[in-house]
Length: 120
Image (tube, rainbow, N blue to C red):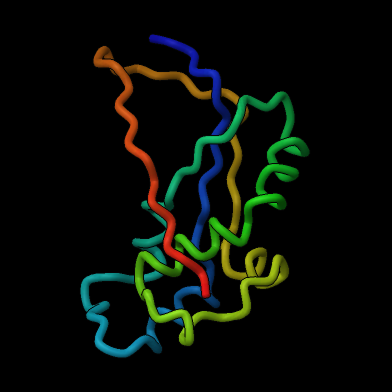
């Protein structure tokens, strides 16, 4: 068991995200629900932080990229996206924090570069 020099937050989709998702063309959501999405929320590692306020600062600095990544997972057509404002981000996603990350796995961490989509 190893403590990792990172903190983590879960980005939990809320009702406005689910409503938007349901309105997207050509998407099959028959096997999904908001509850299912919330149970498997995306996790984001950040620099190690000693408190929640520090994590919020990092999120506030990068929320537009995070918001865009979440939307692009479902729809690459930016014309169908909402305004990527911080207010919308806070309304569309709940955030759950942990300042301590412990790695229980024996194998080495593997990393691959994230390739962000190009915002127009």
